[in-house]
Amino acid sequence: MSGDITDAENRLRLIRQHFLAPQGAGLRADRGTRATEPGAAMRLDVYDHMTATVDETVALAATLCDEQEPYEKPPTRQVEHVYQWLVDETPHLDEERQQVRDALIYRHGLEHAILIGESDIIRRHPCPECVTWGLAWDRHAERVVCWNRHCADGDGQPTTWTLAQLAKDHIARKSRRAIRAT
Ligand SMILES: [Zn+2]
Image (cartoon, rainbow, N blue to C red; front, side, top):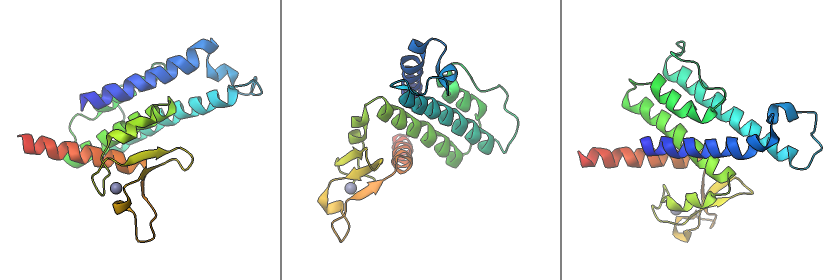
């Protein structure tokens, strides 16, 4: 598990530092005032990505903890610490909830990787259906495609996956491996 946290955290840190630091005051100050500047639209996308990342993580913590107040406030500056915060807030989850939490962290790691141009990471996962290495990221349709033709449906349409499905499959596999290892 800790490896998945580190990956998601490192990528989110990279996103924050690379896209926000060079603009001095950061994206917040840019909002609305310099929207016509080249690159501003992309930076807003990144800002929205970071905001959505934190919001979704905080919302999941609340759900997993039956809406109890968090022990600590979630990080607002070094947002990449939100994953460690989530884990610290949810120490005693049953297996099912733990997998939901871990799948969110893993999916965010994939989303961050795609945002920073490392979508090849998708290829390192077996297809959840045919379990071969034919997956690729379709950046136009924003979904994962399995190019194994034996995996395609009756009409020859390739099997497709969301990042959430891929992350869930990854975490389930990992948990089965851990069970076998004990
Ligand atoms: Zn497949």
